[in-house]
Length: 378
Image (cartoon, rainbow, N blue to C red):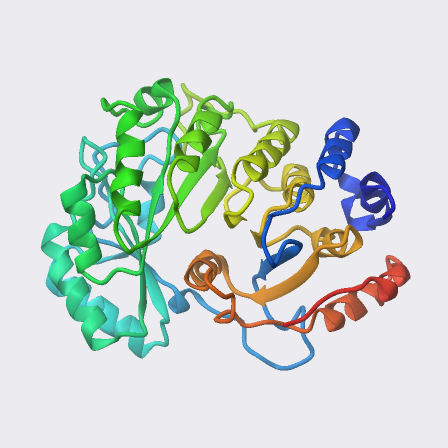
């Protein structure tokens, strides 16, 4: 196999990035690939189907996997990176009756599943209890409808109540630094409570998918490695990594753009710490050159899935020997479908990657060598 630095240089779309030679060599030397029967497989989730396939299939819309907030735009914590603004883009369902109505409307519009979320109280708890009987009613009425829930912090009893409601997957952020908990989240709870919540959820039958927000401490990596150690002590279904995008940060506490090199190092450490766990890169990460660099490091570090890859990332994956799958999905359902299909990967739509390669090879930028790259389709 040719060197991975050469592979990067061969992809014209990646010329905008600045890559650390030592880190790339370390990734290649480690053979940074996930373990298991699908060791080299990587799934890319792209926003539209038409750009990647010859068949005419419509791109998805937000209605395919809507995000619903039981508190509307209200959140007591108002964390520095979010200030509750992320809730504003969700569909408000502030009462159990409204949740039933909203879900029925979304199903009629073609929704396949939903993310159930809401703002936290001062203890980083989302008060779901009045809504869980409706969740149970939804699952009984529409068994195929998938529900992922952002749990926030829970105890064992609450985790079991969520499990009994029929939820399919549970997601929560794991924070590994006490300074981040107090300063960014404005929360007076110990880091240990995040691991205790993860432990309570993994004791249930739920598909548990913790998240690590890389650079959460104002753009610095601080508690990420400790969060990784906490996750490694349990058995979640997958791990999702996202990179901080503090577009709502207050002027008096600005966030830096995290170092792409440090993010890449963390990706490699994550793969080494969790060799048999699916690790996915979510939609959230800084735009521009940083996104290109982050995506390249995700491929080389052996991550299993990337939502909305930068231009050139798919080509690079093929050049370094990854078995490429491309799935048409907008960001809201990319992780939803991936999380729900973790067991066998057969639920996600697949596109003929050979057609993608052909289209890339015919671009004016001159990618003719792509014709000889081996790729794998479902």
